[in-house]
Length: 125
Image: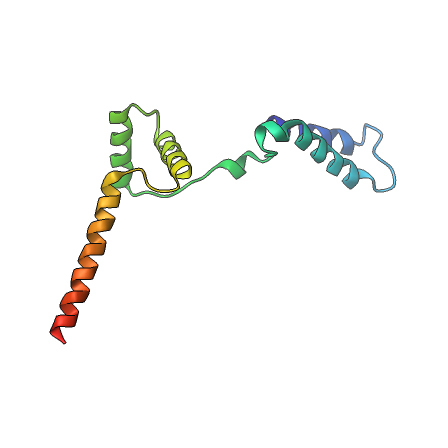
């Protein structure tokens, strides 16, 4: 957010007619250099993100899903559904797989049911 504010401030300063504007169509070059300098200053620490909207993730849930998620957040002491989603995504990114043992058991049961259904189809032929 600070990088974005600095970028806007510098663009306004460069393009303001009360100031001496850059000559010979140098404004695009000046803005590009400002973006590079801000990126070099904040990029290592903050990931070179001048646009805060690029870091926002949204998804739709039904009223029932929202109520269920809000209840789970309250029971687990989380501040919001966003916190819960962030923690869940961090676990997925760290593990590369779901950390819920029930989900893996359900997957295994589905696989077994699919194999049994195929076996039944073969015996009917």
